[in-house]
Amino acid sequence: MLDTQGGLVRTGHVEDAPVVVYVQQMLDRAVEVQASDLHFEPYEQRYRVRMRIDGQLHDMDDAPLAFRDRLAARIKVMARLDVAEKRLPQDGRIRLPVSDERHLDLRVSTLPTLFGEKVVIRVLDARSGQLDLAQLGYEKDDLALLERAIRSPHGMVLVTGPTGAGKTQSLYACLNQLNTSAVNIATVEDPCEIQMPGINQVNVQDKPGLGFAVALRAFLRQDPDILMVGEIRDLETAQIAVQAAQTGHLVLSTLHTNDAPSTLVRLRNMGVANYNIASSVTLITAQRLVRQLCSACKKPQDLPGSELAQAGWATATSADTYTVYAPVGCSACHKGFRGRTGLFQVMPVSTALQALILQDASSLELSRQARQEGLRSLREAGLRKVLAGITSLDEVLAATRSEA
Image (cartoon, rainbow, N blue to C red; front, side, top):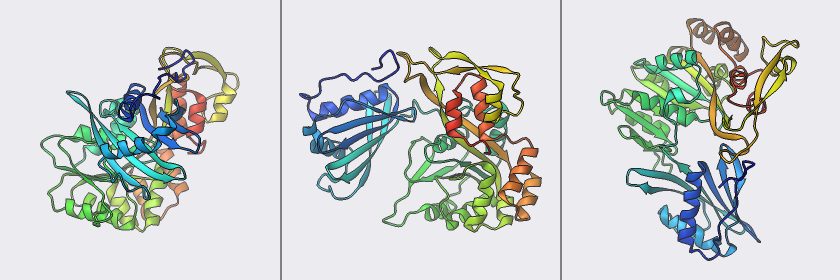
């Protein structure tokens, strides 16, 4: 599958293979190279196939142009979608048996384009999904803070970051640790990406009016202990989540913000009262994903202290030289990288921060107080992993801001 430089080998003569066999071959390939997404993209003169591996899209062999309509139809049949409907986008799921004890959950999205329907399949492999908090990349002290917060009987724990930062995986790692027969856990998502036995999972459905707020209200009548909301998108959802956190429930959710302190301001800007934010939010963790260096081929190199200082490492001086690692590429990885790890900024909401929230403090003031209490920036968390040889400096610089 991989060449000696870490690139994908383009093999296979699929022109004569039936569409059914071809689709199965591509799904098997996606699982083998641990791809998260599989793209089938029709154009006038070609049918492009790409896979997203460790966050990067890689070109595969083009599919035969003759497969264009039949391939989309095959996948729609597998996902129980309307095969005749080619004018509107559709979403569906496939549960694919890999062995007697293992299944793959595939999320299918179709989109009408100029030259046919583009199909994207997200591969949700529960086995490859890291649902152990200790394996996600948290520093020991940050992990202890997070575990203490989710073990609390009530309060709100928020995970923030851009799309694709691994927020859902972090939430499910928390739920995996809390999931016992002694608690009642309910989740509402759009859509549910990871199926977990023992948890009551609800998909948002816009047509009948089952949104986040409606589901949350229903949850509160279901004798819950722990609630997970896929995303707080509006004031109504935020207010119900806050109410639940204040009335003896543990609430886990996500927001799209750049860092942990700015999340408090985002809630205020949505319309949540300051006293409700201060009394409900117990911990916020911001995160990013970066590619991990391949342990088999990474090579050491010297980094001048001045470059590390410029990147944001406060203790670095121009007189120092640091050993870091750079990607190379081998048969075991993808251009020098294999897998991804998280960069985390974990901020407990202290009494001092609560007082600032009640005083309508700005994001800058909240950040300053959090830093005084020991909060690390995402950039600092990334540089720690650079010095530990886990990832490269370029990866961290691309994923984080120097002031965040």
